[in-house]
Image 1 (tube, rainbow, N blue to C red):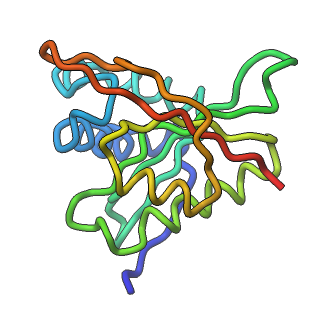
Image 2: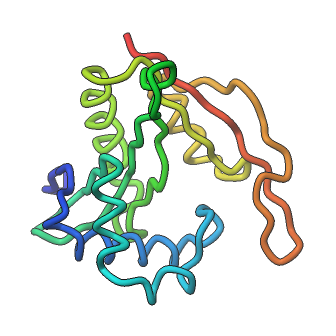
Amino acid sequence: MLNFKIEILSVDESNDFRTIRLSALEKSPEMFGSTYIAEVEKPLVFFKDCLSTSTVFGAYQKNKIIGLATLTQENGIKFSHKASLSSVFIEPAFQKKGVASILLSAIIEYSEKYVEQILLTVADDNKPAVHLYKKFGFETYGIETQAMKVNGQYTDEILMKRFMS
């Protein structure tokens, strides 16, 4: 078993957040709405702003960030009972070692205090992620066809939701 820990990132960890975000965009470009090219030149304040508007979870091994997930609570009195999970990424060398499961467990435990629902979208061809989300109680409630378009190719996204207990 790997020795790693999960932390909620503060603006003090902006460099770590930038590092893992750019790694995610570079190594798994098909999974994200943004691109490495679009974010690599952004100033550190851009990443600090991201950390101040969402709850970002980082997975660390030996003080090196190896995973990421972002939870963003909806705004507005009628929507604040919901949060969106996005930007889930584990460095390839650490995939299939339980990091994503522990990261999701931490997010769910945190969310139980603040929201009633977690929503997410996942590319329909990302079968390992779909399987993991189902294992953690997420259920499909729809499909957005042609949700992303890259180089003239479309990807459908599965819309999933988990109600908190």
